[in-house]
Length: 337
Image (cartoon, rainbow, N blue to C red; front, side, top):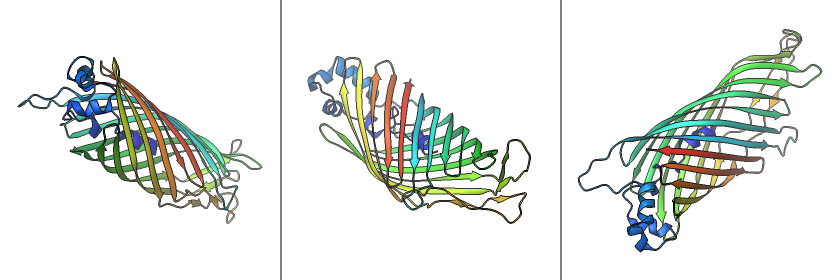
């Protein structure tokens, strides 16, 4: 859900970032591009500028709202361990395809929606499993000069199958629901060779698990382990910096970006108390690996925008703490008209 929500709010999607405002002067792009300023007044430089930032609005002209569409493939791998209980570790992997559409209501306001389909697989001390997932969400972004505020809400549905090891392996299949939201605000500073955006964000994720029973594949209700319904909620604050530099090419623009941030999670490990249906009064406690309260976020991206409206980008991000190592990536294709 974090991957999907942050993809919804990706500031690098064409037209979203404050650095993509058509009100920027030619000298701004010239400061980012490795070409002389006199070439920016015409020829390749001017064509690149218009393709990336949009043509400068004429005096008295009205802004024309428009749509843009985009698609992104996302994936990642995470390992969580425990220094206190070495056995309470877990690992997970995710892959999904996201398709979205943005509507530019004005030069300052943009909203849109997206849907995703994919899957996950996971393993831990209490068992392993996989899931098929569907996600849907919407966002709004508004800019005022070099500042911006953006928010997104998302819903996810997962069809989960799990296996619990033991004398007889227990199996279960159930559906779960997830809800997430994020609000973010930042301000962009420009230098002659680099753009820097300072931002702060808050987000939450709620994962709702239904009551379910795990049982051997060969028999119904034979020593089934019954889990009650449960709800896991994680909230997080985030503060960091994003940088970008742009270089004009013969057929488009090359953008390089980096990301560095600090995140704080307010949630501890979750525990559940299953009971064996055929053995009343007998149960056990299952504990998950705790999230570290503080973690470092780092990443980078490369993007190429062509004059015909197409753009391609790839990014890689990592999350590092004393207990969690998470690596995620995205490959994006966009077309705007």
